[in-house]
Image (cartoon, rainbow, N blue to C red; front, side, top):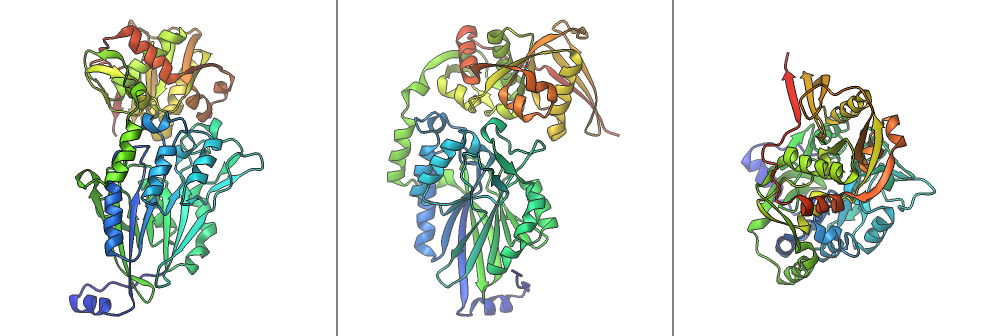
Length: 475
């Protein structure tokens, strides 16, 4: 729908809101919670407070409910604690995030069935042999005065044609390019007073969506974990996102006169500063009470900080267990920023490696190793790997990778011969390199390999370890 032009004169503003047919809509929104449950008791307080003050209050999620907290991911019914707590708020709607697929399609079906709110996605098409049940593209709410809120769901799709999860868990599903497929739903705005995209595309693609397809009044976004304190206006579309990990709850306030938007404002509530709901606190405490996750398995002599140090430890663990010459780990699979100095517990390993990946081994010559590195760089036009067994020098000009130099542990150019190489099965299936289709899957789980390495080699000291060196030239 078209918005009224908001004239910035105070007397006109107040005359508009003096009319009896003004409708106020509150949409609370979160995104990328990644199984972080500890602020749900505070979110409940926020939801209840708004519902006590306003007639029309809704709570939406912009995807990525799962993966990132072992209390949820390693629960006997993976992901169920999130669904139970979201039902308690209660949530009204969620779009799909890429990490909704991490537990597999069968488990996702169970969690969707248990949810007392719908999941939507317009650019998913399930084939006959898919396990996932076909989701609805769109959902509609009608406020108490008859105002219609229409919401379309969109999911991120990568260069390989899949969302950023293991393709092995998304068999027999077609993922359409969201930025080309969205036009199919242009007419849906005609039956809505407020047309919203619940987007798990990331902030940059939300901007593209608003620029090229200005159908939506509001885009409530996720995927990029962007903190937009007041939202961003782009091409007559209001773009919102509330960070990640349930640190914030977004509050969208819309006012309509004669079913046309005359006022819009978004703000973020810091959930850490809110009061707790006692009933929800008890549920969270029961889930967090998991002694098996608190077992000490080793120690860190120095804190392991950032992708280089953590990734070096993870790839060393791969080489140590798999007895390969070279091991690679993608940065996207390193899910925490630090293992602090001191005792290391089981929970930290699952936080570091939550996906349950296995490892695949190959025989590769330096030419293929460079192709692997080049492909990984092309995903985001930046280095995205960690390595053990070699060091890598990359020469980059204006974001373009011009040269790769491989060196052995003695700093000499890597001789041309075949090396045993290990990567995780996400990389083996998500990277569209033909030679990666012929690897041997070891069946060993990444968290198990890392845990055993920590037990064997503690105390760990990776202070300052770095094996990828970038020489960047800007012209």
